View 1 (cartoon, one colour):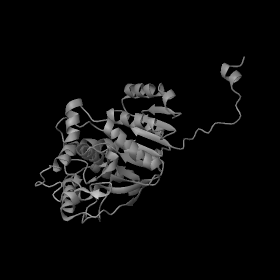
View 2 (cartoon, one colour):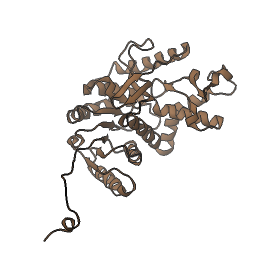
View 3 (cartoon, one colour):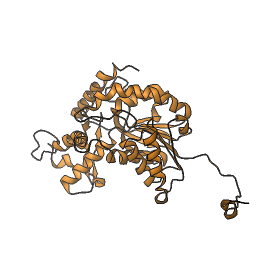
View 4 (tube, one colour):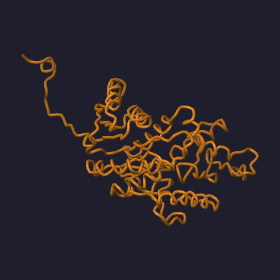
Length: 332
């Protein structure tokens, strides 16, 4: 007796089960799941894999997404505790780690999360030696350096989410002040994803009009319009969201999806992401900080050499020193 499937469907050719745009997300906490749903809604992958050590939550999150399959176009969603399920991933997004607590700086998280990276990165690379790795776990700049060292991958294929979200917050707040949509407000934040980040006021513009040409004191203490407060809000916003809701998720999920789209679709868009900055702007140590990078199918293909004024360059060096003072003492 033939089955219903056999009566309904006549098979003509063997199905190709090898995914072409496989994405693995490591960690199914608030950030990992925000990344997952944003990636699914953007149709960036033909197979989404979730990996975590918490088996019940992992299975529940997978099922919850699978049951929404009617509403997006990703044919395969799987999960597992064993990292072999991630094999042949094009992109691995690492969100695993202990959560930042209220009032805790990203840098104070570092050694606890370094130990987690030691346990997961080598095995992930063993199963996907040709992958690009996008690091989201905090403190992201230090952990991107650690992952680069642990993975053995080329620098171009280990990318920290860095200041992509900081710059998005910056542009949103500039837009709020001007009454203009953030896509039309152009500005960059570079350096550490954190307290020592550097706003590039010299490059802030709308329709090619530099705001500093209208207000030379823009971003300084003597600016009567208090534009400097916008950068303070960027720095404080993550902490404020954690205070209010316990964690951040949607902003970083959308930011990571933005980066994933540039990589998987080979868009060659410029993003402020964390990469090796040794040799740039007078920095001599192997430090990862955010600077404008071109992202495509090979990861970071190019770095845009932005001209900084003396104050911006001094702040970037200070940001590098802040990280180096912690990085040099890491044990891994």
